[in-house]
Each structure stands twice: as C-alpha cells, then as structure tokens.
Amino acid sequence: MEQRLSPSELAREVVRRLDAQHGRPVWKQRMPPLEELVACILSQHTSDVNSGRAYQQLRERFPTWEAVIEAPTALVEETIRPGGLASSKAPRIQAVLRAIAERNGGTPSLDFLQQMDTESARRYLLSLPGVGPKTAAIVLCFSLGRPVIPVDTHVFRVSWRLGFFDRRVGEAKAHDLLQQIVPEEDIYAFHVHLIRHGRQVCKAQRPRCEQCVLADLCAYRQQVGRV
Ligand code: SF4
Image (tube, rainbow, N blue to C red; front, side, top):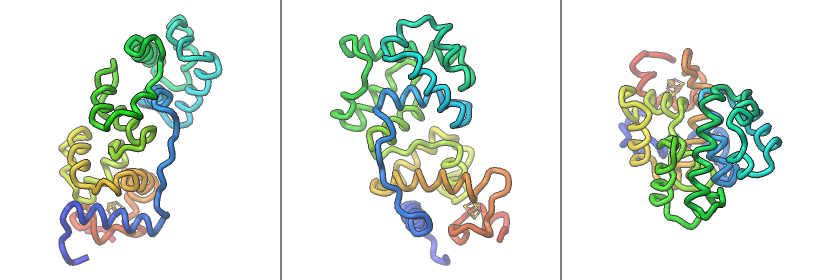
C-alpha cells in the first residue's frame, strides 16, 4: 500500500483485513467479572492449560468464594499448584477476594461493575490489592464487554512491528496509545485478531511475513526487507 495511513486508518485496515481472513470476532462474556479476575491472576506467568487446570481445581475444591477466603492459605496454594507461583498467587487471590467482600457487604462479587461506567469500573478494579492495569483491562474487556484493549505479549509485538509505536515504550504506555488509536467499535476485534496473528503468523522469533496479509502495511517488514 503506497499511501501512508494515519494510525487510526492503519488500525481500521488491519482489522478489515483480519476480519476478511478469519471473520469478525463477536464478543461473548467468558466469565462473570470476579471469576475472570481470579482466572487472570492464575494465568500470570504460565500457560493457558496450566492456569485452566489450577482454576478448575480451585472451583472444585472450594464450593464458594467465601470458602476460598476462609481456607488456610497453604490449602489454596496446594490446590492451585498446577498454575505455578502458587505461593504468591494463593495469598493474592485470598487478599483480593477479602477486599471485595469487605467493600461489598460481605459478598465476594463484582457483578455491580456491570452498572458502572467504564472509567469508574476501571478505577474500582485498580483500587483492589494486586490488580494492575493489565488485569483490569482483561476484566473490562472479556467479562464486561467494554472497549478496552488488554495488551499482552502478542498484541504488543504485532503492534510495534506494524509501526503503531516504538517498542521501547513498554506495554503500559502501549495500552494508552492503542486506546487512543484504535476506533472504539474495532477494539475487541483488534485485540482478538492480534493475539491470533501473533501466535500463528507474526511469531516472536521468526515472523512469517511471506504469509502475512498485513505485509504491505508493516513498518518492521519494510525495515528488515523481508518478503
Ligand atoms: S509482515 Fe511480518 S512482521 Fe509485519 S505483521 Fe506480518 S508477520 Fe509480523
């Protein structure tokens, strides 16, 4: 593509091409917000398979979130061990559940976030112990369907390669930049598409530029002269 696109036009074009290749991603709630939050904590620094197993074991052993709060931390730790880093994740999960219950009349639930505007919900999540911008974005995006981009390693890598920002900005700043660049109606599709593209085509070690439908748009490909 000869003509230089603005960042927003580039984002639209990326989504348009990946929609054409894979179909338009349709948002569907993965889990209620509290479940999404706990699953997100368990997913840190491990594979989806391992964190999924840890989450499943946690739900099977403890029938309610109250039971997780009241359980000995060592038992929670043992239960989620397949997810890795159990000694730090177990107390973090208990602390966040306890904080939510204390602020919510004793009930560990985040269902009330559905009634809040996106910024208020984001601020609430960030006020919880151990919840950072990335975790908050995941809950907002996947559980509440809000136009927020969680920037994981794939979204970050594909985005800087395409030229949306310099890779040295880091993931936190990348989130703010993409939030401004990507049109609101395309945010969910952009996120889902870039994860898939990063896993299947724009791989970390050897990007498959010769198979990439975005090659003529890509700053990285132009710099390194691939394809
Ligand atoms: S052209 Fe290559 S580097 Fe650019 S997005 Fe496609 S696979 Fe990634």
